[in-house]
Length: 213
Image (cartoon, rainbow, N blue to C red; front, side, top):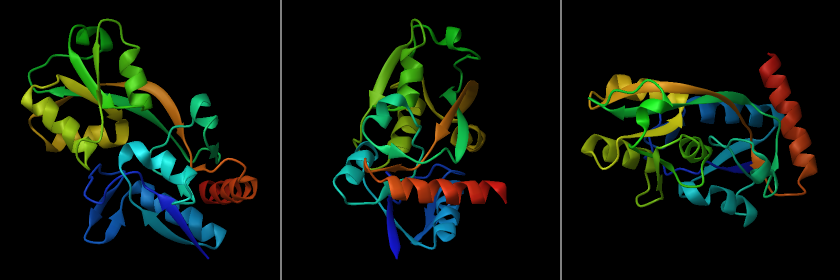
């Protein structure tokens, strides 16, 4: 049996070490973790690529069996999807254009800081007093690169995304500087269609098996 899991990102989207593609091969923490859980469930994993903003809608329409790609478990999202237990906990980080001095949210007052629309990253930016939050939609198929280029060009002053991708990004792109991390400890899980209790139970057992080994 095969399970189709929505990655919510086009193949070209490169957010190392979380995920990236080399040819037709999906690499990184997210695909490796999903593949390990699928093996524990006795299933073959098949990635289904969609635009970032439509990843949960893809599951609801039945185009995929679940969404596994940086989906924080929130109460609002629990009203839309069922969720497995968390398979990881991650913080969020801010990267700014080189030359912008910032080591805390207070240093960003009056600056334009971007994040993906309808994301928990954007919620973080919106919570910072005096910061201008800029929501990015899927203007291209690579919203992460859109945020990088907008920051480097000066269209925005920085952006917030998940810490594992942000630290190496600032190290490999000399147009950007790492500013700080927020200790959010967001739980990430696999989202599935509401009422998929058997699938959630199987996911939970497999995640528990993988994290215990």
